[in-house]
Length: 212
Image (cartoon, rainbow, N blue to C red; front, top):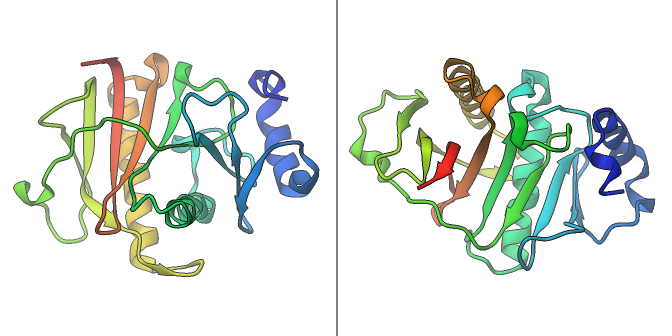
């Protein structure tokens, strides 16, 4: 199954299969919601490496449409649930690849417990209210490293999401799309990193090029 998933046509089949046949797919399942599923990576790069995937064919992070934001939000919720049940205290990272870095043409997130990304204090930057802005990371981890400021608070009750959260997520996707196009990252390859903080805020990072 893992080898098949890398075929060019596999993305649509994966999305369809997860929506209708998740219960019988031979994987080590973790948690699911109406719009997303998770299971342990068949070839993990570290202990506790989990895949979180929407139950719909969405090619990549930058292809998420406004009416598909619920799929992203439930992926984020699954990660939050896994963190709480594993007592990780938000000490995890979600990442998803794009361009040549993306081997499987179906949006999916890697849930990782061991990582290294430099944090920033968003209060050092003066951003208008309800404004999402991309800035160059002052302590880059990659040759190209942008961070979306301010971080977004994932405040919710169950699977109900506020309009403010949905609008903020939509702005983040838009800003990342602008950067990907402006710097031709879809041809070079890039990774979106989602870093939760202990105050329940989410930091979005965009990285490309070699690690520094």
